[in-house]
Image 1 (cartoon, rainbow, N blue to C red):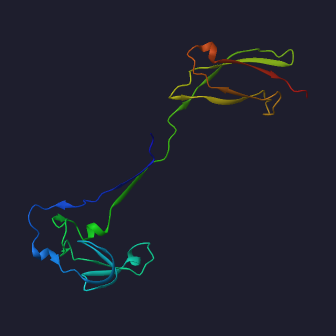
Image 2: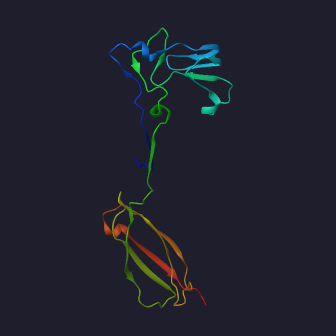
Image 3: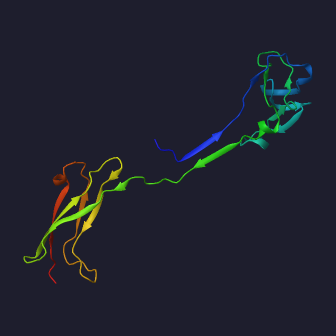
Length: 191
């Protein structure tokens, strides 16, 4: 699998504290009305009073709402019954409010090469109005080599087409050279 764009981010999450959390790291639950979410580290409600930090939910997210958010200072948590009190979190500290995102990207590179061709045999003189040409695909198509589409024709010194023009594909995976050889017949145009 090839990957051209990677996003890396990190957050320490919650760390378990074995020691009891001191009372100085707890705050009283703010007064609220029509609560939407009540947790150890956040309260979301229509009306919130006496919360440490308060702001509108719509000011910090794309959610269009009149809900208010309250969070305790620093790494404090609200006094409340329930599990999760022993887990330490960054709370409203800068490292929790800003999440680092690193983007790594690279341009797609074509790492495969095209097979090479060689003109093996051709009639040096054109006597009957056509020219027979044998072309050898030098290597078999593989994971590192891809086939080639070619346009073959006869051209004058002024680069004008003087024969039919053929589209020939060289895509043989065979290891036998004769199976990678193609014979092409070009017919001269009447001038």
